[in-house]
Structures are given as C-alpha cells and as structure tokens.
Image (cartoon, rainbow, N blue to C red):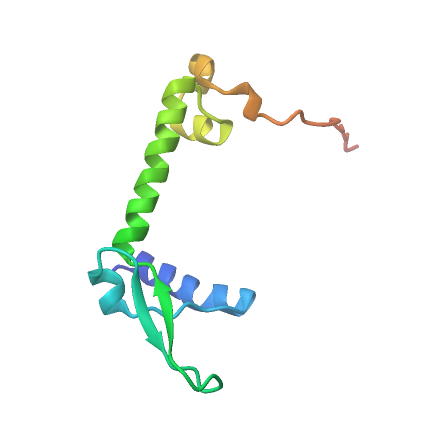
Length: 118
C-alpha cells in the first residue's frame, strides 16, 4: 500500500474521529462484497433485544456517486458553462476560454483595501 493511501486512512479514521467525536465501524468483508444495502443485526446491551441496522455497501455508495456525477455532468453540458471552482482548474489558459466561465458562480466581492508600506 502506498504512503498516500495510508495517510488518507489515518486521517479519516483517527484525525476526523478525534475532532468530530464520531467513528464509523465497518465490516470490511460485507462492505466490499455486498451489492446493495444490507441489514446487520445488533444486540445492544441496554435494550435486551436484537435490532436490525441498515448499512450501505461500497457498491451501493459508488453507484450513488456515479449517478450524482452523471447528473451534474449533464447539468453542466446543458448549461454550457462551469463554475469558477472547476473552471480555474480545468483550463490552463483561463483568459482564452472565458465563454465557459459561469459568471453567476463568482461572488460579488467587496471593498478592496490598499496598503502601502513605507
């Protein structure tokens, strides 16, 4: 496993958990092998009875992501313009492709403050 992947895992599992105070326990075998959502039985000590927990598989989440990206792609194609966050990363020569920039995505800005050091 490469260093970048290890650092991502460490970041997601430890840093985020320590900051946000939550963690997500995953049954790796089921998470990666199931094709859709699945039920997981849980036995909480305090409840005295079994509950079913609905979990989302990696394949299901990946399909959701693909659907979202496809929908957004279709939206951008229909509009013919891209928001500034994408535009300035996508075009090397940004000045020659301004007709693709969605000007509505730019903020109105604010007062410019000039400071001169003497």
